[in-house]
Image 1: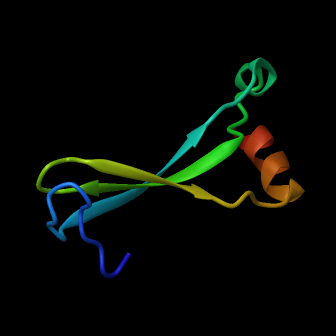
Image 2: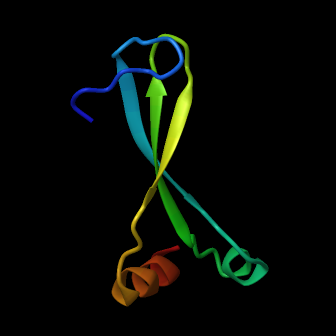
Amino acid sequence: MQHYSCSKCGHGAHTAGEIRVAGSFLTQAFNMQKEKYAAITCNTCQYTEFYKIKKGGKLENVLDFLIG
């Protein structure tokens, strides 16, 4: 994000990251992360916003299962 402005405090300094979360019991049991989100955290007030990332193809799901 090039022009980020915190929606809570208005500052522009931020840290970007990515998180993956499991959905159902089966995805948790096989350690498959079903959803991906971009996490943008304000460096001043630590407010974090999450943005859903579009899913990859089946190959990405297979690799995620194999690699864990």
